[in-house]
Length: 270
Ligand SMILES: [Zn+2]
Ligand SMILES: [Zn+2]
Image (cartoon, rainbow, N blue to C red; front, side, top):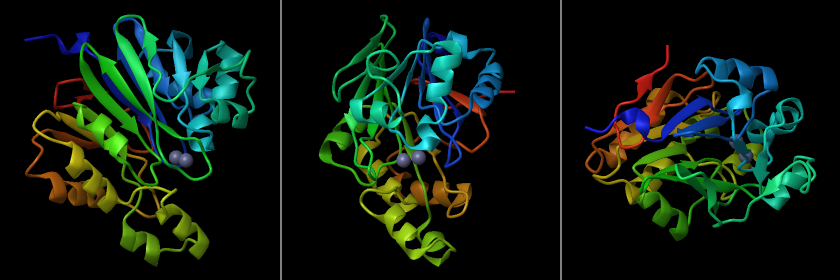
């Protein structure tokens, strides 16, 4: 049997509207997807994995919203960590695209040695040039996608090839529409440019999971408009016949577990 630790690991440091960051480690390469935490919070969460921000090769930012990008300028300044984003996201984070941020283009592969490559794919989201990421290691793939207002065939095609999928399950429709948010905000969240409901996430997953899919992480759950058991049961109801792997939920506080690519059960972080 192969050693799980030789493969790509995916660890959510926390997710939700108060901050998102996902650590990818493969061989010598250590890359963070999004950094919605303060420098202190990031340091604290990496310390739980016996790492510091100095260990990171790069931070890739999906889009400029504060829950994904807040910490990037501070971390670049304090630790000199490389930040990568597309042009619009870089500009909207207030970073100089020449000196402070490396610009990537959609569908241009970003290579980290021979262990890890990451493909940014375009996704639709509210007033932002948002991207999802497909990470590849030794011929196997993982999707890290969030803040999806909707989806298209290209996203389905990329996600269908992944053995691990981390995807948002933002809100339960009943909770959102019967909850306290102002009407305009409800419509924005539920709109084509907003977030995916549990039902939409379940529908998207039913188009992409199969026997090859080993693990799923549901992320970015709304504290106000969702609950882990509702998200998980709604997704399971839709994909139970298609999927025999593990479903975990990434919460606000993390890291709680790591997935190793190709291995179904996550390993708990104590
Ligand atoms: Zn967003
Ligand atoms: Zn977000």
